[in-house]
Length: 405
Ligand code: FES
Image (cartoon, rainbow, N blue to C red; front, side, top):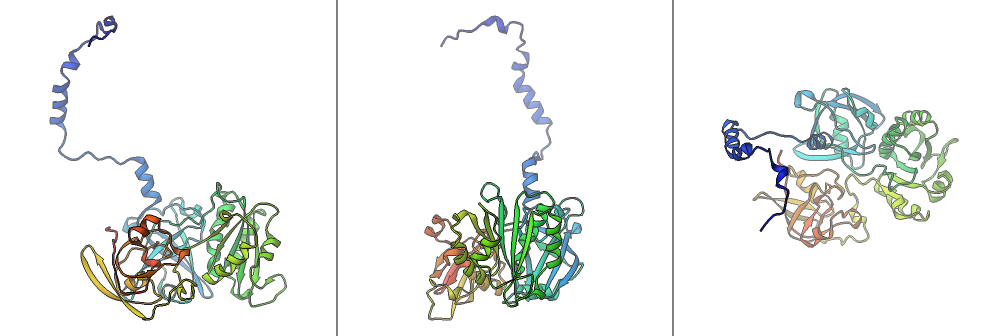
């Protein structure tokens, strides 16, 4: 092939470096050290800082509030955590617990605002209330004390404000300790980190057991009208408080004119009730959101649960070829059965949302509540399950893949 180009443009250029290219390169290779070149990209550094698999923390202080306590967690620098990861207001961390040999990961919302995670004094505050059934919460309230070391996950969960999806005004329905994500959001609004308005309809049994009452009201006062709190008492009539449950009428009474989103956080019984009430509001589906982390309790009451005749099954767990068989009660998740047997099964949200417990079904029949089935269609088709939301209907065998740290 004949190339037509202007040869004059190349006149005067030395071809020496070109001819010596191989020699020069070989010399550089000879002179280079034998170690593998090290390089960490900035994007990887940022990802590691924002999404650490583990964080080591110490309890800096403990404050009691009746049947709840607040724990301020700071980095445990002796164990290698220099600074806590930044988070979106209302995200959670899962806490590693060893309760009498049962290895459990439990999710708890970071109640403080994201601003507290910044700087050299970075901290998270968790407020944990005694729950029913009182298992992990009782262990924590009885045992955690100032100076204790803990291992927690990085921040997780997607129950946060998303300007592209959510309305500029959020009506937050909180039940008991369900105030914690909204407390974090209120901090973020006051600190100028989040830009939306929020009306919190906060349900409690009586005025004596309103968790963090003074603290959330102080935040509302500081917010220059962007955060409002309305207390609703289910078991007491008192002047200055609403009485009863958070009904559609009550939501309409305090919601702004025009567009708004409803966020809710509380126990399953509250969700069952609020599903009916929020349906009456006629809002588009994306305008109603629920915090889902935490165990799926009371599966026996699900309309679709095919109550098995037997009360206990055998669950065989295969971890990298090592098999062990443990008992699993009807109505109990496979995750609970593994934890009780001391198996270090991976989990974070415990509600079918995060996918962390993703395991392969080898055999057996099971029930997975529709509401907690966060699997993709392909997962279900090719036999993948989330043990945190899988309830046995026969003996079962599964393969579990714990993270190697
Ligand atoms: S622990 Fe999150 S999906 Fe099971």
